[in-house]
Image 1 (cartoon, one colour):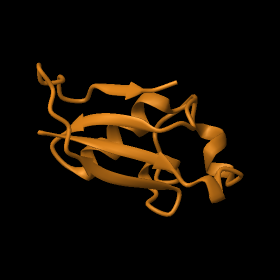
Image 2 (cartoon, helix red, strand yellow; image 1 turned 90 degrees about the vertical axis):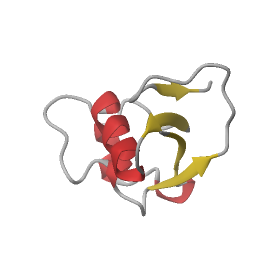
Image 3 (tube, helix red, strand yellow; image 1 turned 30 degrees about the vertical axis):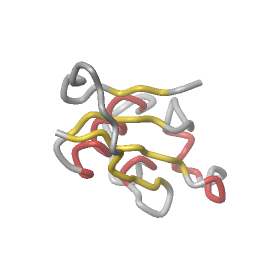
Length: 85
């Protein structure tokens, strides 16, 4: 399991897809893969309805995703999402 840092692309925050997300800030996600991290974020921040392929957290043009080298004293539960203010 890894920690993934998902960062909205600031040049594309005006994209209509972001209207479907309750969060437009950087978040860290505990997941087994980038695809899982993106899916967890899409599900967590979805505004109304089902997650669709237009969700910005699933789109690598709208959101960057990098594996973080973070040492934690206790592992985060799978699917845990942290948004720093």
